[in-house]
Image 1 (tube, rainbow, N blue to C red):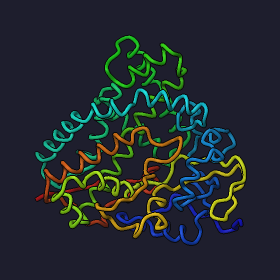
Image 2: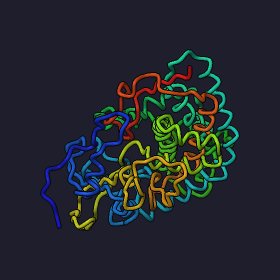
Image 3: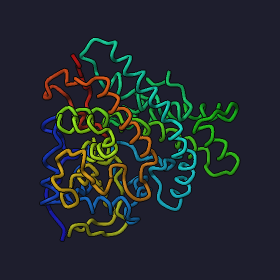
Image 4: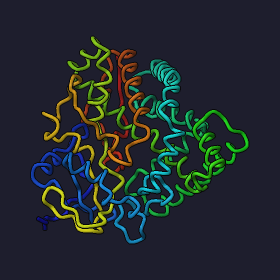
Amino acid sequence: MSTDAEPMAYPIARANPTEYPEEYARLRAEQPVCPITMPTSDPAWLVTRHEDVKKVLADRRFSRAAMCADDAPRLQAVRPSPYSILSMDPPRHTKVRQFASQVFSNARMAQMLPRMQQITDELLDDMAALTPPVDLITHFARPLPLKVICEMLGVPYEDHTKFEEWTSHIMWLPSGADEIIATYTEMREYFTRVIAEKRSNPGDDVLSEATQLSDEHGTLNEGELISLGTFLMVAGYETSVAVLAESTLTLMRNPDQLALLRADPSLWPAAVEELLRLTNPGGSIFPRIATTDVTLSETVIPAGSAVVAHIGSGCRDEAVVTDGDRFDVQRDIGFQIFFGHGPHFCLGAPLGRAEMEIGLQRLFERFPALRLGVAPEQLEWKHLGALGGFREFPVTWK
């Protein structure tokens, strides 16, 4: 069947900054495929059930490349870049994905673990020297993944203010076209210079390896190589910032679960999976276009429509997880779509998991009395940020 329901405004704002919107549970039960209006005023369909989300993410009838068309509905003021791996469909995506997996490998991430632990401890040392309340995002949740990805890519952390500014423009849904275009231009110019430097003076880092392999084998053209650098920088840290802060809040609010982790640290990997399931900060900033009529949950999505698969809602779907809003570090969820599903499954999933496990475990070991430094209602959620997240997250430990 189809629906003539009035479109909802998307993203759905949080009535309470510390609570996941109840609206998603209602939509899963009553209107799992819902017409929405994106911030650009363009129409789309919001998909909220777990199985439907997986289908949108994996089914080739839902195209990312089609979002690059001039007349395609848009989530933001400019169309996505066709050079980005996120804007490709197979077989082009397969080629770039295989190349990116080769240079951003699990082995390279594993080599980074000792340094990640060192960075974590250094940040916690610096934080301990401050007088609380301290903004956890400024002093821990942002610099941890940002330092890690800078070292992996081989770009100087001293440029972090540029990266933060660029990312904030890209990830702010109401950003205007001129602002976004200027941001992408600056980023591409920066990574053009970085790649030229890697050609002259290669190091033991991801971008040096990517440049060398691409030059030797002609795997990527220059535009694709530059876009890979910009993608890995933004994707390599921004999600972790939001998830680390919200996960910290979840652990603070569930002292019984935190006690289980302290008594048995072997539970941390399962706890990370549960935190990822519950703290997915945003919906989807990468809509797809239905290339033919597709029926999901008895609703026909017409060809040419934009579709937003809401991963956060799918992670809480009680059709696949009992009592989906409850945090349980001993839960075996048996699935994980936080990092996506299908061809665009996140390349950095092992890195993100490691940052969560190392960062959160050491944070609560170092500050066993960690708690919010303000009343929960004083926190502000960035509901128009592509990934959501708290603007600030003050904590104290005294």
